[in-house]
Amino acid sequence: MTIDIITPDRKVFSGEASAVTFPGSEGQFQVLNNHAPLVSTLDKGQVVVQTASGQQTFMVDGGVVEVLQNKVLVLAEAIVA
Image (cartoon, rainbow, N blue to C red; front, side, top):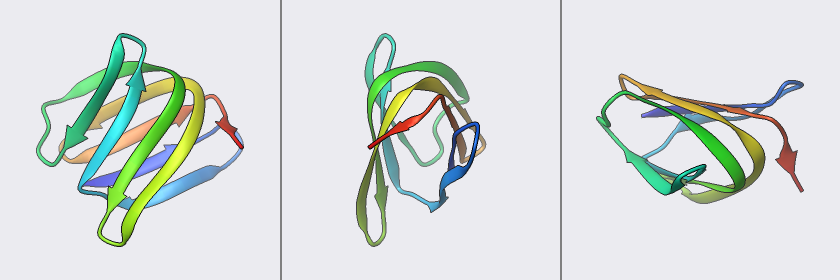
């Protein structure tokens, strides 16, 4: 699946992933290939992206995620260092 992580001022990540873990406002959840369509709000926490070359972690300060037809779009309020 493809994933894009975007903040209001820049694109943080764009690429292929096999799994993504999110800090949902109702609890942590994971998205895999061919996941059902989904829209969810995110709390402050780690977004963990599993790619073919390894794992990348991004600290988000809240936001929204949309999953549709193997495309994941993360609109993060901010990426915290």
